[in-house]
Figure 1 (cartoon, helix red, strand yellow):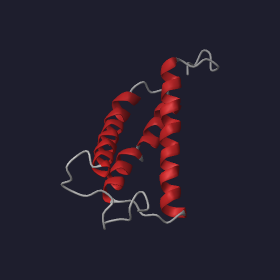
Figure 2: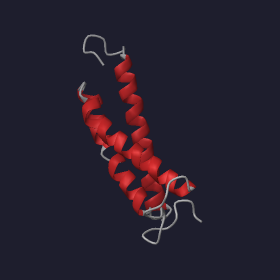
Figure 3: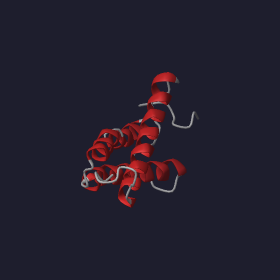
Figure 4: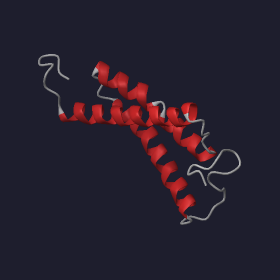
Length: 113
């Protein structure tokens, strides 16, 4: 937001707000599934969460302070999480060869199977 007109939001501010809300929803959803429903994540799910959880404070503080460097802080984590999620999904779907098996004994299955 600009200081001159607090009612107007630039396209970058809207994008940052959307990214923050998506990261917040994903974090709260993951915490709800783990803490309330008691379903423990598998190893690959944990790695994805490691990339996702810091996005909430990083993007929130960038939005609050009007910091234009949010891309510099958030994109590496977002792309790391995206790569892990794509790999995890590929392993689970059987598209990629499995050096490790997703959703193994290290944690319950992500799908309940």
